Amino acid sequence: MHIEGNLITQVQLEEIIAMAKPCNLKGARLYGARLYGANLKDANLEGANLKGVNLCGANLKGARLYGANLKDAYLEGANLKAANLAGANLKDAYLEGANLTGANLEGANLEGANLEGANLCAAYLKGANLAGVNLKDANLEGANLEGAYLYGAYLEGAKGIMSLSIPGMSSRGDILFAVNHVGCLMVKFGYFYGDREEFEQHVQNKYGTTSEQGILYAGVIQLLHVWEKLAPSM
Image (cartoon, rainbow, N blue to C red; front, side, top):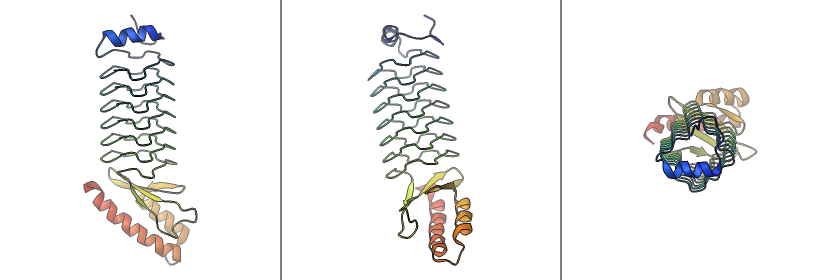
């Protein structure tokens, strides 16, 4: 059967999964398919259209999902360990509790995705779009976040990300988050997101160096310098 670019029915899909290990679904149009708990270990799903597909609890360990469309897909509790998701579209996907240990997510679009409690330990997220992502209680220890975009991301409770809250820092009670990228420390605080040097300039422009707020932030910046030096070994 020629799969690439064709719409695969549920019956055909089940036959392919049952017959071939690992199965080849490269470029297949699978939107609406029911793949709850399916064994797709090492499967080739490059460029496949999996928009809105139910993959809850599925085994996608080592799967090739390069450039796949997983927008609005349900991946709660799925095993994506060491999967290749480079350039994939995961916008608004549901990934609560998913295992993404060592997964390649370079350049992937995860805008608005829910990754609460997900395991992203040692994941490769270089240049990924994480705008508005829910990373509450996620594990990002050892993850590569070089050039990743975290504007609007929810980071409370995330492991591998440093957080700081000091009374008087923000009237809104904002928490400062510091993320270790390769070569620099990125800072997210309220509406601000930039590297440590840009944060220093932002604070100086807004509060100066002699005001009460300016003095408070000077101490915070000193702490960021210490964190930046320690980050590679943390």
